[in-house]
Image (spheres, rainbow, N blue to C red):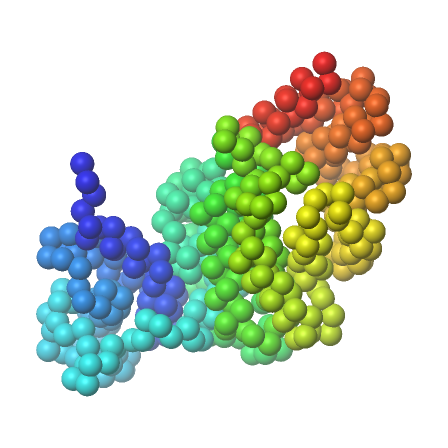
Length: 426
């Protein structure tokens, strides 16, 4: 049975325009949870009306008009003479119907809201959804819901948790914002370092989960990664003077450029050394390099995201693994370890050392991390150790390390890859 085109149109418009619709309603009502509820009511009405009556000429304007009318009804119920009701009414032509099917443009042909304008409403949404009073999980859920327009089911599938868990996180986040009386606004510039860091960390977390799926049957969750990339592009337009915004965008563009070669026809991940580099997205590489150059010009030096983008550029510039400038990669990891030290950074540096100075030097670096509690829980360290031991010809030790990695691995595609490596050892 073919899906109704009206429903497909609702889904497409909501995915593209929901952030600006919610942002406009939040600016008018002064309350993010109320605005999100009003936008959801408009979406529900569209799901009923558009398949039956056809897609309106200005679908985004239609949704905003319905949301505004619902807001007027809400404030009318609270107080017929409420000042907010009067302010809202001035923005709306009262000649239409309560279902939002009245005029979608003013007398001069202008929309009641410009769907092509990206302004402080979207920026305020991002900052509000990533407010410090919220937990990291709530940051992610609320950002994907109100900024990206993803449903609770889609968010739940993306992070492999029950839909009820996502709904509970979003509900708690809204209540927390309301209880804390968090204003819907772009915070003062002096608060940006703390707040912007939270925004960027959410976008980076979403992209990382998409680019390197920690579980499930696919090595790359493309929809999730590209949603984060879209948010990065929006941020770069809203905050063109922030170097780390461009650094993060460069990192995501350069990483996403390798997606076409990341997965084999059987769904198993393809390692960097085995990827067909002719399949890499050259336009994404150009965009990533341009964003990295902008980050370098804008700031006083690259931050953690910019340095990671510079690392990705090293791979993008090389025609093969052997032609990669591994000495520069090691130096960049040294810089990253000072800016944002972590066990994962140290492990990746060890891999670079193995490529630059030989497997014996790399093994010494890996063994120095053996007692790290974070790496001890995952499969990455024994997997890397097994690779290096294989290069050294120590096949029995390599087999033991790879078996440990297989026991710890939760990603089905990664497990298949580890099994193939074990089989190759005989």
